[in-house]
Image (cartoon, rainbow, N blue to C red; front, side, top):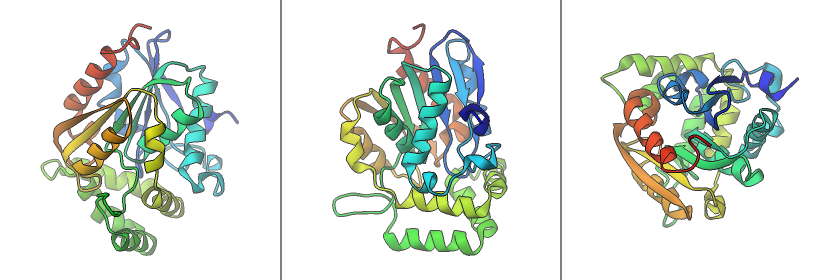
Amino acid sequence: MSALTRHHVSVTGRADGPALVFAHGFGCDQHMWRWVAPAFEDDFRVVLFDHAGAGESDPAAYDEERHASLQGYADDVVEICRELGITHGVFVGHSVSSMIGVLADAAAPELFDRLVLIGPSPRYIDDEGYVGGFTEADVRELLESLESNYLGWSSAMAPVIMGAPERPDLGGELTDSFCRTDPDRARRFAEVTFLSDNRADLPEVRTPTLVLQCAHDAIAPVEVGRYVADAIPEASLVVLDATGHCPHMSAPEETVAAITRFVRGSAVVGA
């Protein structure tokens, strides 16, 4: 089975354009990009997919050993891109997919000329001299709650993650997305996400990078966005006037504008 089938890959936009690959975060699927991705179809070949264990990916795509680390998900991205013949594209990753993109870029530097990291966090747990936003006890409690009552955890956490109380429909959509995910695979992906530490990978990134950070984010605070932008040699930070961890849903116009400025300032568009 091809990677395109395994990951329910969708390709739209300009067939001869440079590729713009969107990668969703934990508990989400490619549908979450519906307010952002179409804005780029005139200039780009827009690629959407579902991570293993998420959305409409083939159940056989998930492998406990391969997906026990973020590298396994990065390897999936590389396979998808190579099957599509992508080089010199743009990668847009939300949340945990930001670090997945960093790892994919390191494994196959020819794939992407630009990285866009939305709400990235290389480590969610606080460390000496580093603010991740959570104590180790916080993360352990989160994982225990997820394991013991996944549906209850989803209902409680989704509105916090979305951070848009004026749009309860968005929190409800995220809750529904969580609930469509197999609880056992969601728990494993949560462990991989919240216990990973990719800080050492950031200084090795040589690809120009845009870090998009919400002004108020309960999952990846502003300090984390600044850390990522400072650690990557060719990175710039844009703080969006938005609340929550999913600006591509709660503030899509601002998100599109920031990405557009970044890619149009490069040789990518029209390549």
